Image (cartoon, rainbow, N blue to C red; front, side, top):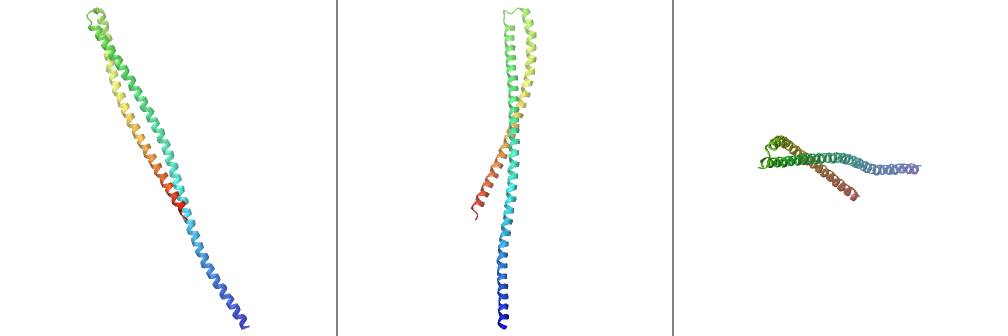
Length: 180
């Protein structure tokens, strides 16, 4: 009986020792798994944040490209307006020169000189008006050029931001890929 009690005691002792060892090993495994799950959660958060930032940058990039298109179109309109005013001014200047030449010609009758004189006054008034319009059109063109340059600079900055984000994501992918 003593042997039986000793055998049971030994069995209990060994089973407790085995349970203690298994519990310690399981605890280490659970700790490692917990650490890995936490790392995966962190990676998922980081990836989600990067994806959201990428989306925001793409939307901002699209908006800025549209703004550049509008600014470019406005500049084209201002240039066309300036060209039109300059062409009309050149035509009026040519008419003035022709009328002055006609008025100053020796063989021009006095009655026609009087008629040309009133037409000449109208052309000169129109020329003054066109010169004011031309200055305003030039100011609008300069403003449109500056606006376009500003929008293009913003677009370049956004593209650089997106490129930087792409490179950082690519580097993170390489690091994660090479990790065991």
